[in-house]
Image (cartoon, rainbow, N blue to C red):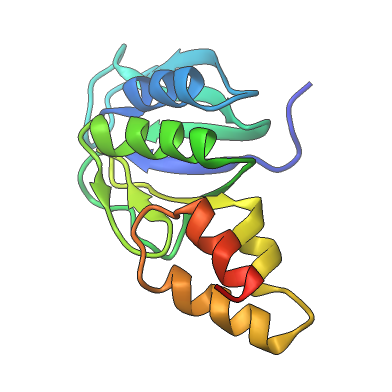
Length: 160
């Protein structure tokens, strides 16, 4: 059954590689059908891969090999909730280590230019804590980080 709502992500020819990377990296992710162009199009020829269906953490996506006309920006990102430092490290290192780049506050970018927020659940709980002093301490700690340090966030929650 086709999803009623699917994210369409524009790639400059790398949709299949990206989909395979996401499927290997993130839980509940897979590559589905690959569709070839039935005719020539501005950035490709008949028979080239036009789209690839895939899921990222259960979210249906369609990768479109649309060419160089549009680039990804931080205005769109995948936010992935992690349970501990090991999961945070694994996902962060997979993205950054595969030609991506670090940013700030748990954000990084993959080699195709898509932005990811690798967000430990303890961080979300901390910045939304009903005690404004706790939320501020956690927020201030996060603002000094690239990859989130779970132990430092937990210490900030405790007041240390």
